Image 1 (cartoon, one colour):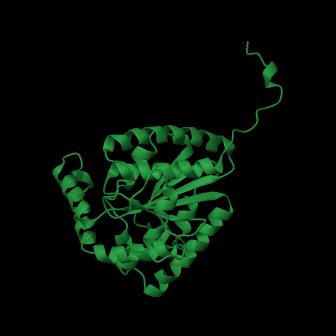
Image 2 (spheres, helix red, strand yellow):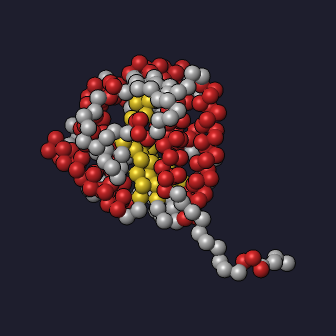
Image 3 (cartoon, one colour):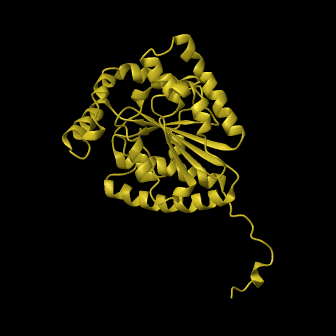
Length: 275
């Protein structure tokens, strides 16, 4: 898939509700309208400025919240998106939640219990680094619960996201699409770099062997849980710089459409003189 400057990034990479999904039809090497990386880097800087200004208005507006869900295979770039796309926004208005292996307390509740607690409050931008979708991804692939259990979760997730949307949360979900070959290069780079080796785990190789199973699980999750109120986007992520531009564009498009406004100031402030 390619993109011209006249196309909407949201429209281009959105998974349409009810549509059959073929992840192979999405080019993970897509660079959109760019021929050179430095063009995209310049655009990203401009997008960050727009995002910073929009977030300031969004925070002051205090009427909605925004939830950003990031999912990907290992090395897909979730941390990179948080670092590079959100660079420059006011940190007091952003809440990042990583979802690791559930604790015993979390396992004693329904699978959405820990997720609902982390949902962003009004005026906040919440970012999920992994999310409730792990319960239809790794749980499915690793057979951690029976199929009749995880099979119900697609609709339960849809209902949960409907609740969030109905009560003021705007939801954007990004699947960072990389190829298996690209993952191999990134894993090797981690292994070869003294500053990155701490991020490498032997378990990553075991998960890599299940690549096809994960692709099937992602296909099911994205196709069954992309809705009008909580869309999924398949983001080309082999080129990190284009991945960042795509997500930044969609965030700016979404916040611009919301058109958050600064609250009206108190009456009579024109006559106030600070002494």
